[in-house]
Length: 96
Image (cartoon, rainbow, N blue to C red; front, side, top):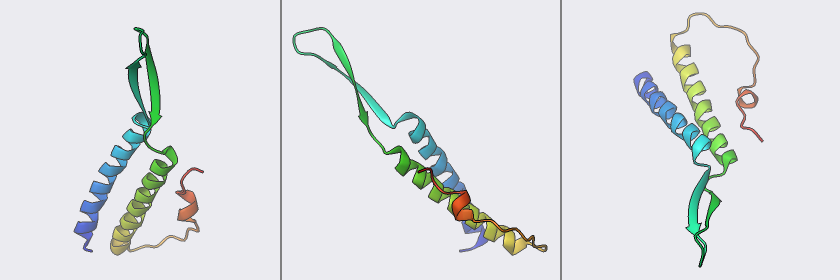
């Protein structure tokens, strides 16, 4: 993959992350209203649409990709290295 291709993909993945974050915030539960038989009373029913943990896991996977791709792009242009010991997998791990 070229640097330009990676940068375009990073942009698309960032947009996807924003979409998933909106889903996580607003559409985890779908509300609908139904009329009870013989009455005018309406009952609101909440139906889970998405698993919040699954959404968080996908967002984390996409963020990890962005980190890795961005790091490779920057590494290709780097002249000076820094010595840092970090476990990226643990740092960006999804919530349990």
